[in-house]
Length: 246
Image (cartoon, rainbow, N blue to C red; front, side, top):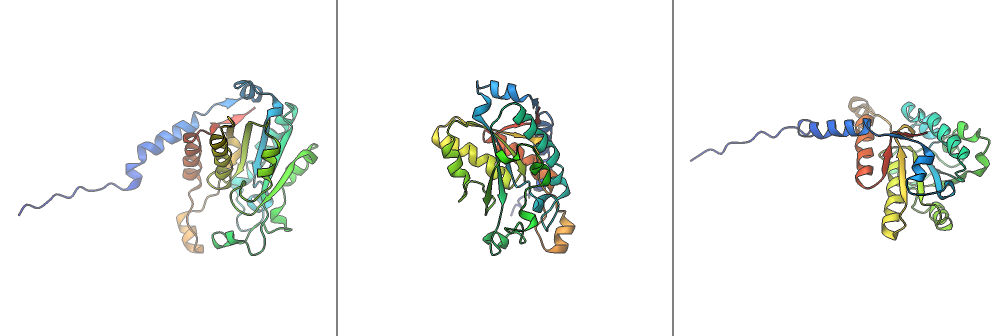
């Protein structure tokens, strides 16, 4: 009886190495764009644009179990982008922020965090120090999706003129991904012809190594890999991913 040969299957890291390399090169080649040029590409005025930031709050940047130093590094470039957009007469600034009840269902997946009324749920001080912060629309949310059971749905309906969205914040593979994709898919489903732009220098995600995760009983999370893969996946679905906006 002939013995069938068994073809050795390469591990995923080997099978996907070429793809991962291509994703890294693609991300590294994203252009930096000028804000006026970005709007001009589709003949849009500043009044038709909005900058929406998700979860740039103390609980993901500085305090609490989910705070990440690498996420905190996006505060400065986002603050700079806010100033740039304000100087260009962009009128709309929206902050969607985790503001959980103490018994939130999400705490079955993540440690209790950003509970309403605590320091963790507060907007970072750099945003609040902006001279035009009183123009910001702050929208609490109770899940990683900014468009599920939040005021953002009503805000979008009340501002049909806004068809240019700049989405920033954290985490690239969680709340930022959900925000950018929801805005894009909403546009596709309704024929709104909106564009969603994600500047890479204004988004990031956390890192939790395999050994550290095992020690605390959590799932590991490779920040670099997931950051790159989800940027690529957003672009695959029509999100305009750029290096930065100047």
